[in-house]
Length: 202
Image (cartoon, rainbow, N blue to C red; front, side):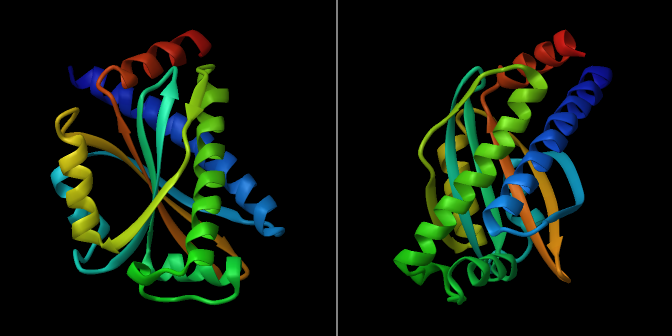
């Protein structure tokens, strides 16, 4: 069993690396300058620990959610802490409102567009690596205290699984660093489908 778990973790990491590189390239094109992928970590984490992993439960975060269809089923989220979301907002609309709960329509729309680009590109990278056709749906954006957002995820998702795949990526450009979490909430059969595909495609 331990061997299967280790193998699944390696498969998820391989898929995550492909997705993160694809997301980096898309973000570079969108912002019209080179963005570097400095670091990436992948772990399977209990849903109950998400708020602890993300940090302070009261800290403001922004989340972009996309429901996933096609060959893999589940949900994928882009999570940004207040520092990273502010940095990205300044790049997108020229200013930052530190209170994500009161995000103006222009900033919200820009986040949704950027999250859609990053997550869709991430999924494209996974799809190219695995050979599985993926069908992302329209993005949904939310924000607020980390604990409240994570509680909502648990209430919505814990009837399907008590674990998720948490991918932490650090991007940088011109001395600025942006930390983005990609939270993959797969249906139970999804990891097996991905594993079988990886085995077929080497």
